[in-house]
Length: 95
Image (cartoon, rainbow, N blue to C red; front, side):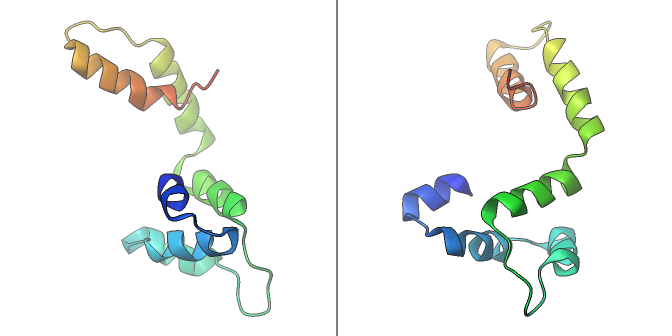
């Protein structure tokens, strides 16, 4: 989403509306339970990211993925497969 925001030069005030418009199925249902009601302050993009992260990337899962990254070895994977796995898991161990 952030790449798209950059490409279209999306104003801060539209980011949440544009992102949540893309929600489908269970995420759309979840959004219906947490989105601000009329008269409540609108969510910022940063707050929405925090809510989504807490809902769909629990801390225990992040720790497990970080450990998987730290233990990652190429083994029988091709270089391409290893690079893809490395990139997939590296976001869980930013340091």
